[in-house]
Image (cartoon, rainbow, N blue to C red):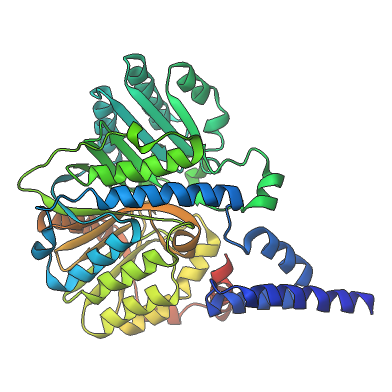
Length: 475
């Protein structure tokens, strides 16, 4: 009898708490109700650990203050005589305007964008740019390993610091937990590199009571002298990714950018740095040059302290502008209804929609939830390819040979709600053609998935996929 009373008390208490929250989607509420009702003790613990998106009062207040400054500065970046909106196709203008509303970063022209041919070239160019730096180097990575790539990058920063360049290096407290406790990290500090840990978890118990362990900084930012930036999916690690070698190589995509949009990535980094380590926006150079002819570009940053559902709304707005073709690559596909319906709606109205996923995923939970969407996608007319050449980690979107979106965001609920992300929105036929060609390379190394393949899945696999997808909103 006592056990029943406790069961009812737990279920009712957490149900009231969940119903009081106005930031939850109905599907998320339902998923939590199911878990807590079926497993009241386990469900209560899970909700306590992972149910609330909260960095803690002090941290949230500090980040909100810095974010307000960053947004204000972002709105000042566009000069009165540089409004490239009239050069963006009308059907895509709403997406650029929506992106502008998120961080205050406007679309700017005069950017030189270059697609790196491979991961090694991207890292070689990045290190060469650090070696040529004269004033400042800023780097932020979710995963930074002390392998060859990570060590070479650290040594380049140390060389720059020793010759008087201000170097700031930030790494996520979970994704780079080994590095920030390593001798290499200490060596960087001794050489004069300023270091900071984003969302540290030095005391996991304290973190659990004040915040959430899985709120992470997933950004990949490099800014050199305020004039050069890199944007894409590549962490600071070898493609062989020794911590998960079974799924290697990690296949990434990176862009090297010069021009006015560099200042926006610089501001995004500055916001993260100041929130964790202090300082002022005056400490960061915002003097990028212009390149003519150049493309129109815009940085979009997302995170748990930014507008809720910013990335899904931007994605759906972009999809609404598609008329001919859309190609998407993402390693992790756990969409909410906004994203899934935008993709299916585009396919239903005759847009040739192609999606590329890794054949072997390093997350069995994500794989199951992703597979649960296959039937809906295929029946809408979406073409699905599964890449077999490693873990396809590139996050890309190209639309109608005109617009591209590339960066750190996956099409999953973690990127939508829990991670700090950075992405680059582009309007340029030449660079979009380059990214489309890279997507074609992925497709050439992929297996086509048909409706007949999904029909052939055994019943237990379909049950498992759908069961995981049902609780997907709380994963």
